[in-house]
Length: 181
Length: 197
Image 1 (cartoon, rainbow over the protein chains, first blue to last red):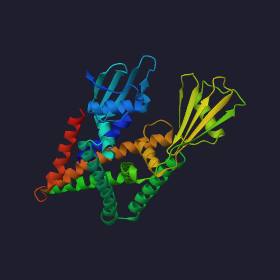
Image 2 (tube, chains in turn red, green):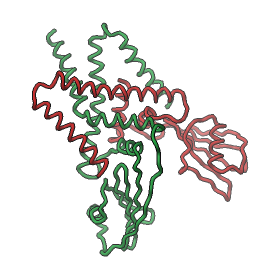
Image 3 (spheres, chains in turn green, orange):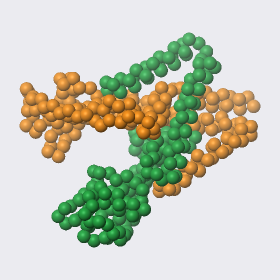
Image 4 (cartoon, rainbow over the protein chains, first blue to last red):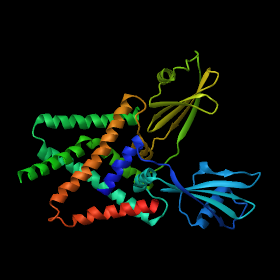
């Protein structure tokens, strides 16, 4: 029930944006991390992320590497939170902005996180497995619902034909959007 | 008592109707969601991109972009959901999108030519991912219907879950383990929200 409610509400929110998704809190702090200043930005960002003890994605389009003054900026994204990391290759001070998001974004991340987790965060793994299991049960529930509909609820040919037409129309419609658009 | 029986029957009917009203759509979303979750089971391939330049034999009316976009679609035999915007160079960019193919048509600022960048990915996993993500109401009547069906699927999921709970709740004394299956996921959901907050 919890998963279906979350999926239902988050899907409606994708369409209508009624829940806020903006940042609600930013915490700024500094950390001293020794690093090899010759590293390329992708290796450097992975190393800094590891030293910060944060798990998250490193979007490549957020990489900024100024060769002239040595300033580097990158972003670490994980569900519900993101980190903007700024440093200069000439010193070991790492400036971090930790951004927390509002409920709509958390719900969106739970929707995606239920499907897939590649971060290796145990609680997200549990959520991901729970999401897949719920999806499987929901799939079986729909199939059993169709079975019960035909064996118990359908009383005449008109009802039978209505369901068949609705089903075939829906399949053709999905195929049309998929293949023709 | 008779009222109780009617309520129960009503719940069952709402429950069944919610699941069957949009059963194909619900199945599509659940199926594609499961395919997305098992991305490592499928073969992946990179997008293939082709770029073609067309010369325009007429000066388009850029004050009526919707009609111009439809003309391009017809003349170049492109299909898909259309949207348009202006890029940094102030050129008009039309995008025609369908789950496996995206055509991006840039109208050059002198209005004498078009560049068509066609990106294709005929891959089962990717196609499932993209059909799962189609949403919104822009792009004509077909997509308005899609948006409505997506909303109905989402509402059906909520109704299906709530009525399923109410059906179980009426017989909870006979199905006590149901409390575990009801409460445990809510505890997990709460933990997740607190963790991500």
